[in-house]
Amino acid sequence: MPRPPRLSPDELSAALRGLPLWSGDADGLRRSVELPSFRDAVAAIVSIADVAEEMDHHPDVDLRWRTLHLTLVSHSAGGVSDLDVELARRIDRLLPA
Image 1 (cartoon, helix red, strand yellow):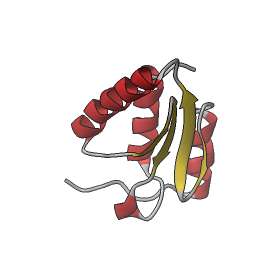
Image 2 (image 1 turned 120 degrees about the vertical axis):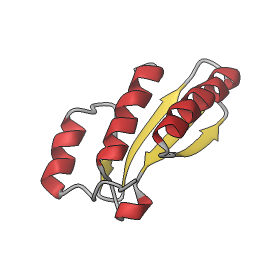
Image 3 (image 1 turned 90 degrees about the horizontal axis):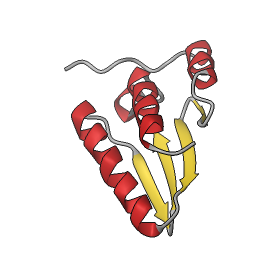
Image 4 (image 1 turned 135 degrees about the horizontal axis):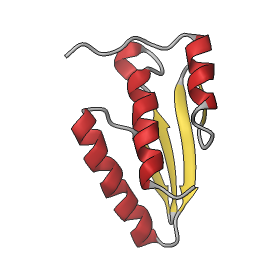
């Protein structure tokens, strides 16, 4: 399956306007979220993993007690692609604002 190309700077800026909980640049989209407990954070990772497997696109996840730090980047594209934007949208539906 062909992977989408890296987003242009203008496309990336437009994508970030639609993802207010995320920050980023050409090297990746980033979001941190604090969950009520360590178990809740681990459960969130499992939910994210299910979506990532479905999309065959996997985020970098760093868990620090009950805080998740997520980074999305399409390594095959050399930066952020539409896959990262779509995964960010799906993750936003799983996590609290």
